[in-house]
Length: 92
Image (cartoon, rainbow, N blue to C red; front, side, top):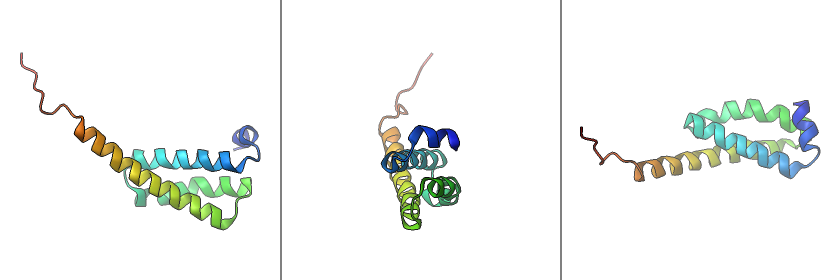
């Protein structure tokens, strides 16, 4: 926490961007935006408090991260399905 605080400093826009990126990756990794809200909240609340975000800004970041991850997972799944090679069969 202290290392990231020293790296990002007081730049709230950069902190919010990094938090949204982390939320996107966590939600895509798990695959459910609703199931990851408690995980994202457990990660985001201490960081937002130490960075000086308001309660409303923290709630907005948590909700936005879950929504971005849900959209990202759906898009990723559709991309994989449309580019799968299931119709190609290898024959010996």
